[in-house]
Length: 472
Image 1 (cartoon, rainbow, N blue to C red):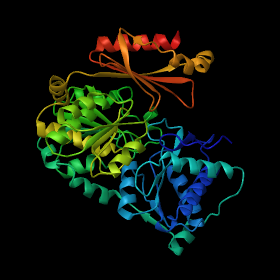
Image 2: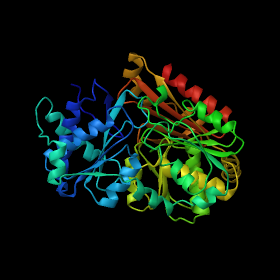
Image 3: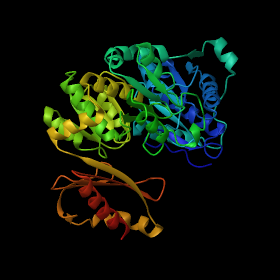
Image 4: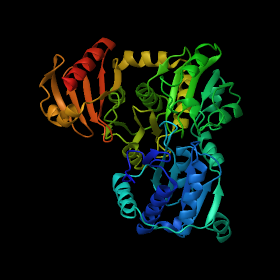
């Protein structure tokens, strides 16, 4: 078997190849041992899953291993969004949760995400310990399992549905009455765990909805369950062609990421949503605190922060670092360019459901489309245009990539390099405000290239120069 390895959002693998029942048992036992070693096993663990193939079966197998280890287990009755599981960790004060999800990855993947007692994604010291324990036990029968009927009778297993408690909490965080008075909302949970979490609260408050892909489909319609422009063309057309629709909202497979379509069918990049919501939360709601963004996220956030005189925390890629700042109550909002965000007073985990409702509230209370809000913000703080692309490396280029970055020129694309940030990858800040970030994939011969400028033409020139630098 391949070595168990946790990435930024847990351990993921291809079904039947890496992600097997035996490996699920192994990783579950490693998590049980980790929790017990930290003295938290008496608080119990939640086990949840999204709509992926065999998700419920894997979750029940994990419950058998946990109860076999004597750990109280709360098993979700139905597919449950990642942020809802995070909310339930904090509500029940459990030792954490095991969540079967591969988020926005294609349907042939599944994964295990462990969230500890503080409710956010596990930090590196936690996942390293779990990895070590799992890999040391590889090839051994290192676990005991309890039949589910026996686990129920013994009191070690309880079925739960955290949906109502989570939605009730959202009632105090979102102005649904304002949304109801604005117009119809199009909803697309992409066949995932967000089904019923987006449309039900809206319809409860009298909001007219247009629904797409609200049925469960472990194949996600044949596309990755990712609410990006590339994969939601049918949803964009729905919004564009219905004059009554004021906004389109979408979530990914486990509903921790969001996708926003404006009333004219324009897809709005998550980078810009984060900046708009920061401005809205500070200016309209009056929230106090800093803002966190990953190193790969737009500096439009920084410009909005400067406008309001608040601190910016730049983090490595991985929402765990932002979640930690939320837990410490240091920020108003935190987010990443990959469509994850959360806010002060909410879970320390990215929440696509919350993000969608916040945008709906923002456009309803401001009585303005997302595009118009963005143009107004640009007029106040300047224009920022951001792009990401992946570049595949040949074996020779991959082996020489690190040394190539060490020879990065002092003047690039017509501007001096003002600063170099190595927080996660290598980021070059140019003296005219443009920037580039090179992040090498840890699993494939790919460089993730991010860039930002003040116009499309400047960004195109910058990205072309960066691409030529990598490939030359």
